[in-house]
Length: 254
Length: 279
Ligand SMILES: Nc1ncnc2c1ncn2[C@@H]1O[C@H](COP(=O)(O)OP(=O)(O)OP(=O)(O)O)[C@@H](O)[C@H]1O
Ligand SMILES: [Mg+2]
Image (cartoon, rainbow over all chains, first blue to last red; front, side, top):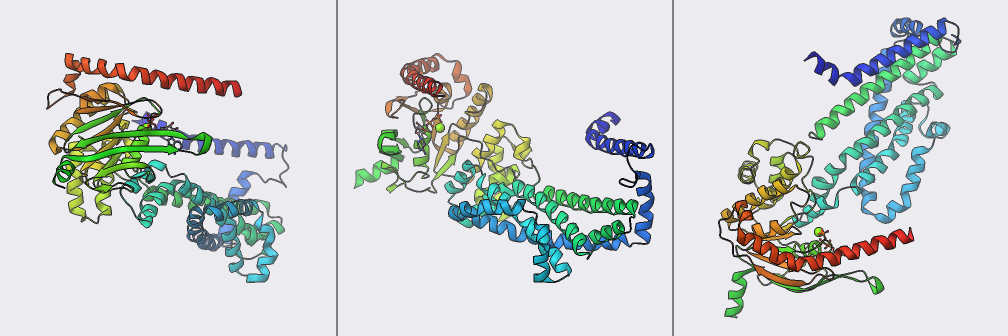
C-alpha cells in the first residue's frame, strides 16, 4: 500500500526533492561566497522577505490584479483564437496565406511594442490586457487549425456515412477530436500572456506583480524582488492547475 | 415491370458493372474493373482479394463515400452516389470516438436522429449486449482492447438498424483467436437479425466461416475472378473451421487466390527494389 503510494507519487516527490536540493546548493554556494549575494540573494533571505512583501507591499492584492488581467486576456485569446482557427481551417487559401504570419506573430517579442499600445490605450490596465491578449492569440489559432486538420479521416468518414450536417460534423467530430491539441495551444498561449502581462506591468510601471518587482528592484531590495518573482510563479502554477482541471473535466477518458 | 420488381425485392444490393479509376493520363490506376454481383436479402456475402486489389475502393463506392464512378450500385431502384440511410458502414481502421463512453459511442447515430435520451440509451444498451460488452458501457475506448473497440463500432453501426451492413476488414488488426470468436458473434447477430451483410476481407478462413457466398477478386485491376457458394450448414459456429467441408472450401479458394496474391507480392517487391535502386 505505502509502496504503491510512493511509486505513484514518485515523479512529484522527485520534483520537490530536486527543487529542495537545488535551493540548498544555492544557499551553500552563496554563503560560501562562490556566488555573489548581491546578484542572487540566499534562498533563506528570500523566504524571510515573504512576510515583508505580504504585509508591507500588499502583494496579495497585486497577485489579484495580475490574475484578473490574466483571466481577461487569456479567456479573450481563447474566445477569439479558436473561432479564427476554425475559419482558417475551412479556407485553405486563407490558411496558406496567414499561417506563416501568425507563426511570426507568435514568435515576435510583442512586449517591445508597448509604446504603440500606450498611445492606443493609454497608461491603463487596458494596455496590459490587450498586449497579453495579442501575444496569446497566435498559439491558439495555430493549434486550433492543427488540431482540426489532424482529425483522423476515418472519423470524418463515419460522420459522412451517417449523413451529418456540416455543423454537426464540426461540433460532434472535428471539435472534440481537436480539443487535446487546442489545449496544448491554450497552455502555450497562457504562458505568453502571463509573460507579457508581467513584463508590461514592469515596463510601464503600472498594475500588479510586474510593477512591484520593478519597485523592489529599483530599491535594490533583492530578496524582495526574488520573493515577488516567486509569487509570479505561484500565479502561473495556479492557472495551469485550473487549466488542467478544466481539460480533465471536458475530456474524460483521455 | 413485374420481373423487375421481383428482382429488386430479392436482391437487397446490386453491383452492376462498376469501374473506378484513379489519377489521369499516364498515371491512371484502375482500382475496380467491371465488377458485378449482388447480395440477396438476409444473405452474407464476402469479397476477398489480395491487398491493393480495390476492396476498400469498392466499399467506399457502395457506402456512397466515392460518388464518382462508372456503372451502378443499386439499392432498390436507387443508384448510390452519396451515403444511403439503408447502408451501415464499419471501417477498416479503428473508428470509435475516444471522447465518448461506449454507450455514448453506440447511441451516437440515434443522437443525430434526435431520438429521446431514454430511448436511445435503451436501444444502444440492446446492441451493446448483443456484441457482448454489457459490463463496459461506461468505459472509454482507451480502456478497451482492439477487438472490443471494433465491437463498439459494429454496435454503433447496428443501432440504426441498417438494411445492409457493410464491413471493411473489421478484424484485420486482430489476432486469429479473437478473430474466430468475433466471427461467432457476427454469425449469431446475422442470424438473429437476418442481417443482409457484405464483408470485405483478405482472410480466407474468416470468409468461409461467415459467408453464404464469396466473391473472389483478382489483383490489379480488381475484377471478379469467381463467385463461390458456401454450402455449410447454418446455424454455424467457429467449430465449422475443423470440418472437412471447410477445409475443402479453403483449399479451393486458395487455389484461386494464390495466383493473385503472388502477382500482388511480385508487384510490391519490384516496386520496393525500384525504390531501393532510386534511393
Ligand atoms: N484516392 C486514391 N487515389 C489514387 N489511388 C488510389 C486511391 N485509393 C486507392 N487507390 C489505389 O487503388 C488501388 C486499390 O486500393 P484499395 O485501398 O481499394 O485496396 P484494398 O484492396 O482495400 O487493399 P487493402 O487490403 O490493403 O486494404 C490501390 O492500388 C491504391 O493505390
Ligand atoms: Mg482496404
